[in-house]
Image 1 (cartoon, helix red, strand yellow):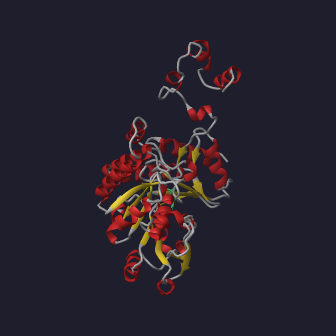
Image 2 (tube, protein in one colour):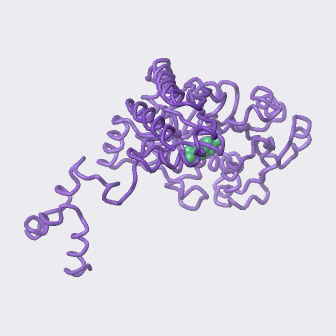
Image 3 (spheres, protein in one colour):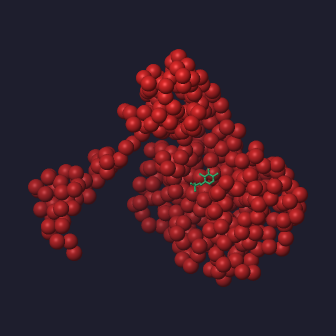
Length: 404
Ligand SMILES: *Cc1c(COP(=O)(O)O)cnc(C)c1O
């Protein structure tokens, strides 16, 4: 039990503590009404946290993306009633599968969680003893073959389930690596360009050898078509991040594909307790938030949004180029973060400042602006900004580059 002294100390740390102490609290009223009035508190300010304009992109460290009001409303709604967690997942899985024209789907704990439960489902199937056995893979098919150039670290999600990664360089090595312990073939869409085996051939190799294929598409909307394309192409499992381009909850994601594998993957998730996925719970609020974010994303006018991003990038590019010595390049990455993007560089004999120094000035200025970059350039995207912020970024970038 809290003593009165510690209670007063705690209360004094809350905003509006004066009024609470003065009247309401002492008369025994609940604090929740006064303190938790929506919009009444600036939580990040209270915590002494810097908020910023996100000119970088969907970075995990920068908390991904911002959710639309419809999504946060779905989340708030979810918090008001009890439902059975499995029944909710069943219904939402069916709804998402219908929306995306695939066999089945489930809301996962991010793309990373989707990979862990996906491979676990493939390894253990519908056998509850095997489910409980993981991450011990004794007696189970557990090797996952990956193109070496695709193995940039996200395969750790597969290791978490007990799988072993086998790296191969090309088709010949891949076929040679297949044996009675092979569980799955895994593809990283972001690195399509750097691996010799492309999508269709990869899927065909899986079918030829009777081995399921999984594609990580975490950061691969836009284009919206990708939500449909890879399940149609024949990948058995496909995952997306919830909190990147789809702008759902950052800790949610989508696992799409073959029903038998997704049903098996679900056996590793809560409410079931003795599983490797018990810690990868997706609460009802985020399940609803993910569904609504997806619905909104599918309804969006993607061509119009693209045009807006192009205009925003051009505005920022023109503003930067108006400074003597600055050069810009507009580009669109072919896979992953496939959006209009800007590179800004300059002659450092004219503008005596490194890109890191300029990025720090943007970050530490008002408003704070986060960018990406290297020792050669600043990288900017606008898709994670609120409309209008592009003007502030254009202005601040020009100011920073003009004052060295
Ligand atoms: C972001 C990302 C992940 C992790 O996705 P989460 O939704 O954060 O779990 C996995 N793979 C790739 C390629 C990513 O970009």
